[in-house]
Image (cartoon, rainbow over all chains, first blue to last red; front, top):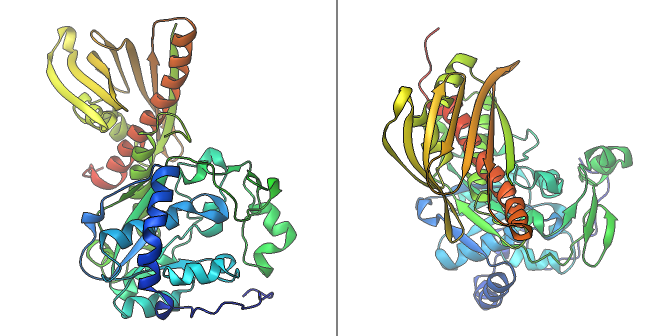
Length: 275
Length: 149
């Protein structure tokens, strides 16, 4: 439990009721233009998504700006339309509690991360998007940009299994080329007590615009790296592992399948950043 | 001039099982060339095989006909047509099972631009090797039928 609570300044409700389809419809053309021109974005594989509530499990990158998260929400809302089954993303409190950005995120369908929130949303018939690696993954070193880093977190498996929904993995490359991250910041976060007080598990040295060299990751202007994203076929934990899964086996399988897809996607890169 | 990309991966399966799969061209080439195209041409001399193997890299197809010689725990090939390159796959023991190492050497013509192209080719080849190794690992750890002890 975090001991320090950030002030709640947001006006948009934190839940599925906070998602604003009309707002999304209005902002989609602008986001589409920005992502196509700036990131030369490519998203494939939505045909794999079944017509039932699912748990999207992704790898995300790019420090606090996480452009691939925004890209996924943009692509999903155009493929399935804003009136279709909503997708609700679970976000770190650093995002949802930040004034203005938090409201923007909630209107776009983000809620503060937590297993009970995900269960509620799935029960309401929506799809849920989670990034198990959290800030450890989004702030992993640039040298690990094409690695799945879930840091051993298995809550997403239990969530999908208990809720009886399939996991739809989503992998993306390019996001970690929008910022330069020089080291693994987990030890620094522990030394500073950030992991206990703010639930921030990683404080690496980063190089970004406009901050320059900075310990930790603040929202920044991303480098214009090409982002590729692939939605993979669903994984049914109940079918594959039965009523009492070996969670370690299930974790190894899901992360392995995602790593294979991520490495294959990365192999399409000719030159980092340029794509 | 030539440049070599080398990548390794640990596979949590017994050495013999890994070596058998990693040095079987019929299994390995489709995995390594998963992002391109491949075709078995026919048996060569001395038990070797000939394959056509191309990687799709942007707008071009890199590869050609390769002459493959397999003798577990190693596999080697060299090009006889197309992009001049060679490949070596070696499987060694590892405390967690087996380690597979792939080394691809590419030869490109030219001086300054040739050097620059080789620099790019090395990182591109490295990412393809990683992708192939990950597919091989996943295949062996999760998809291939387990051999009885």
